[in-house]
View 1 (cartoon, rainbow, N blue to C red):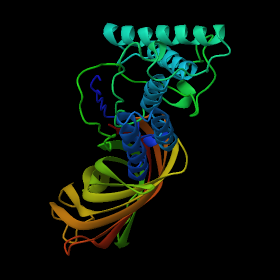
View 2: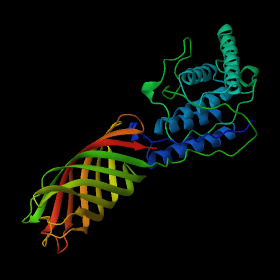
View 3: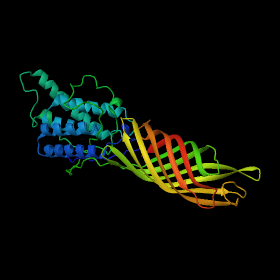
View 4: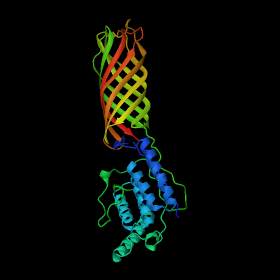
Amino acid sequence: MKRMVLVLVAMLCCSLVGSTAAAAPDEATLRLAKSHFEKGNAAYNLGKFDEAIDWYTKAYEAWPNPDFLYNVAQAARQAGHCSQASYLYKRYLSIKEHEKEDALGKDERATIERFIKELTDCEKLIKAKPDTPKSPSPTSPAARATPAPEPIAPPAAPIASPASAPPPPAGSAPAMTAPAVSLEKRADADDAEPARAPAAPTLISMYATGGVAMFSARGDVSMSTQPSFALGAGYPVAVGPILLDVGARASYSPVPYVAMSMTSRASLVGIRATVGATYRVNARLAVRGDAGIGVLLLRGLGAGSALTDDGAAGSFTMPSVRVGVAAEYAVTPNLVATIAPLGVGFSPAPDRLAFRSLTQLDVLVGLGYRM
């Protein structure tokens, strides 16, 4: 028997997830799909092909990754279910024709087309002899003229969504036991090798936002509303239905002030370690909350500024905490539009400043990217 080929392709970017998840499946979903997949492999290796069909179908139902459908086709061909296997192989080739990346090589396509031809001959034989069993035994020449590659593990994240699947090929057989959605798999063949299930995706999320910030200084100081910008990055980890990420955030706002009848500008820079939690409402919409702790740097104050007690020039460092909420919309599996209607930062001020604390309220919009 030919060796099972493993294809593990990392995602990106669930462009949030999806769906966002878009993206990528959560850890619980991956574990369930892996369990069904491994049981399917065990049944396949023991020659229990109908049982393997059931387990691969359950794996697909847990995580609709098209590669599981290819495994159903392999098991159906070995079991002698000609119409079912032929339909799935045709669907597989139809999907590959619409892909821009990871297309089938000549040898892979030739192998699949050979399978389809053998199965078509099998179907014709069944129709010509209605009194014969509809499904030949797995040892019949029509069903097993060519050894099948072992079932193969799908990539680390879904590649095609049900909505993106092209229509079934003309003249294909009725649908299989599992929903016929989009397909993707390789048909490489080699010597035996143990099966492995999908690996959990590893992601890095990044975002850039801009908007306005309103300042409230406790003391005899007034500060006007100013533009505000932020950059952040994190490493997401799925915990049940929640996607947690730990990372860092940097922010910037200009601080205009008057000194000696002239308007000058200082800068307020925030550097914080952050932790966030994202909950996916549906395939595209998610809500997020985050908290951060770090420092707020007031830099570039010149002499005569009303922001200091003595009017002396200087730069100041303040401890800072911040919390915020946001909504995210997955434009693509990797690209996310975000709106953060409320972020609150608080920093106690050092003695030399003319205010005792600084509170910042910001409203931001921007884009995020996951890979």
